[in-house]
Image 1: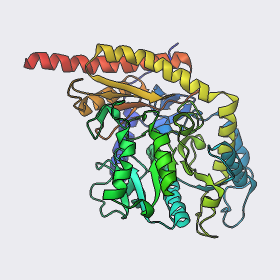
Image 2 (image 1 turned 135 degrees about the vertical axis):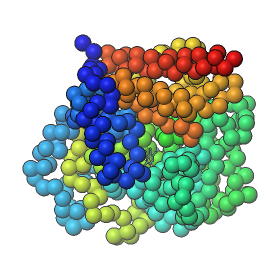
Image 3 (image 1 turned 30 degrees about the vertical axis):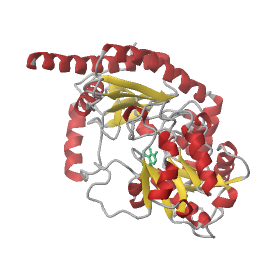
Image 4 (image 1 turned 90 degrees about the vertical axis):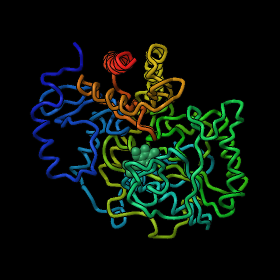
Length: 454
Ligand SMILES: Cc1ncc(COP(=O)(O)O)c(C=O)c1O
């Protein structure tokens, strides 16, 4: 029997009624990618308020590598609910917070002793990494990348690249932030080609230090190992080793933002491990807890200890239920071999997607690492003009036919896959059938329109 079961058109009548209430009561800035209101969820499947069952390729924006309501996670949280819910680690500490820090210190890549601090959200983790880096280096400037996304607070908006909807109208942003091109080879900012470019984008940093900001003023470079919101771009093999070498030469810290890439998504616990990236600090959130809000910064102990007593933390930081969930998630990733599973799922997607790319002009590039895979859609393979409208249509066709997807990319023309890694092969194939039908529907509609015009 298929997993997707639709008993009403999507959105169904109950979802539509709730959407009316939502529009009247909720600020429009709080965006939603689908009009589907959820009633319950399990593994890779969500059931909406009208009784429809959909496969989830969004995973709460990459928070559910271990799936919805993973039994071990639910059990760990339930046990904690019977003990205590909140004391604030700043007032009455508890063991699970310490245990999460110990676990992260032992699995985060990098040599030497490490320490960790827990916070609530990804953006807060990035904010704290910047505070720690500035305090340690006693330098002000931060270098970040085009197409990066680091959050919605003021400092992380400054670090984020995409103007609409994330930044426009919220200016001014904090200063001393400098942006350079990422290794986005499909849309190279220097109009060069890999490998003949000799990874110019990384080497050009030395030029930035001469013409834009002095190296000795730079505290840190913040980078996503694979762009998340920017469209699942994976840099070539030489990029991160070169970046690391330049940072070390100038005493600049390297902060890896693993908020979307972390916890098995890319086929390793952290994407850094696969890409030769040796960070001084790592920010983590999303799939760390299987669905509760918690984030972390881990790094070399001497760096992490630069801020003095009371300079890090927050009322809810490291909530006890979230800590128990994180410990269960970390066990589950190892026990169930989810890193290897990510590679299997990624490969299953790539085999299908290669055929789509060969068949349809619309599919410009297929790319990704492990199960962090994406399609960049274009109006023409030659001009690479972003197909943003068509991307919206593909995503809409998908949810109307029982598959939840989300888009990405600075040009809003990327379909990204963030499915729970616990989904079965049969569910994966069923979901890819829907995606294939969506691409075919949009590509052929586009073809028919072009023929009419011609
Ligand atoms: C790479 C990256 N950094 C930071 C963030 C911000 O995380 P949060 O939404 O939890 O603040 C995100 C969220 O999508 C992200 O993908």
